[in-house]
Image 1: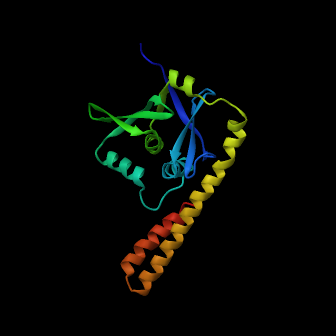
Image 2: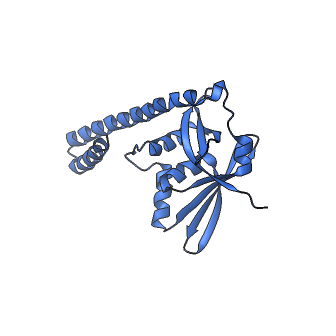
Image 3: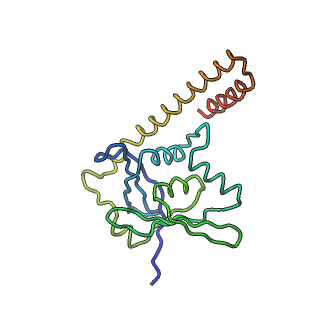
Length: 198
């Protein structure tokens, strides 16, 4: 019997109240109210939130690099499917297409979502999974609580980007003092690009 797919989108990300350096990713069905929550790592959460909020890193992050390699090799990511849940762990397949060939690979769900949002790839799960695993709206998981930490997460990412900008400016100044003008010019271009994105 064929399983019915349900398309998902990112609804929210917030710091986990239970685990240090972990975040909760909320995926919601398109055109519906059912949601599932997935615990993900801090790095993957930052990668997702940066793309979700339109924050550009000065250099490609790991998921950006993977996407750039796919573009260079003319490989498209067709879809992401969360196909199984076992003891709270979500299992996910990535589907790629190169020419007439279709390739399916296993991936961590957090990595799959980070790639999907960058590659504008649809994200799915199955009806039985979202029905069995969907969030129950209790006092600890209401939408007000979920919404509180998203701006905080965004501010943390912006602070990190600001610190990186300051380091680049220091490096440019040092390059000028050392008369490494070609390096200074490259750093200046990166800084101007970063500032132009704010």
